[in-house]
Structure formats: C-alpha cells, structure tokens
Image (cartoon, rainbow, N blue to C red; front, side, top):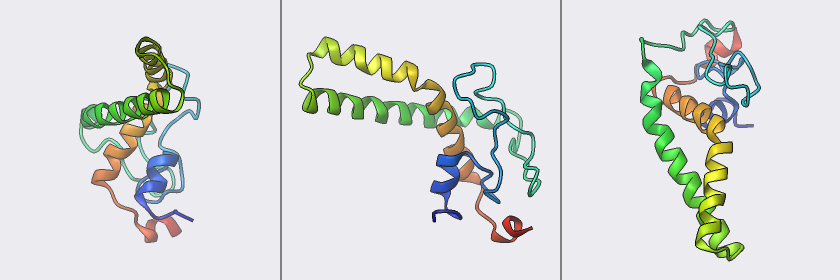
Length: 126
C-alpha cells in the first residue's frame, strides 16, 4: 500500500530507490556485530548505499532526534497513563533507550539515506 513512499523504505529498511530488497545483511537487530552491517549495493537495481566514505556519520544527528522523541513518548506514557514516580520513570526510559538502541540505529540510517535518494519506479520494475 505505501510502497513507493519514503515511509515504506524507512520502516522496512529496503533500498530507497527500488524498495525491493533489504539494505542490511541481517534481519536480526539484536546481534551486535550485524546491526550496522549493510550490503554494498542493492542486488536488484545496483544502487550504491554508501555514497561517500563516512556517509552515515550524518545519521548520528538523526538518531539523537529519534532517541529524544522516543524518550519523550516514554515519559508521557509512564507519567500520564501509569502515574509512575519520577525515579521509576527514569529507569523505564533508560531501559527503553537501551533495548531500543538497535532499532534507533537502523531507523536513523534509513531516514538519513532516504533524505538523499528517491524512489524510482523504472528501477523497481526491472
């Protein structure tokens, strides 16, 4: 349904150009050695993911924003829905941030690459 949009590529981790194949070598987020390991190119359309050396350093800025958004959402839920104490809220936020780190890393990389690349229906149909 959303195929062809940046949202689809960001949340599925597929190639931003053809959206046919995953950018990552492993689908297991919680294997530390494989979390950031990416394919060099898309095997479907040939798109090179690392446009230049150190390209994904920019995703660190995106991950800061994503992390803050998740922390704020966690605070709002724990404070207003569950009426937890401030110390309990702190520990819940820390647990969510630590357990969500691999998700934040991949999500920020997906957002970063989708800023610079657009979906191409011609390459997707090849």
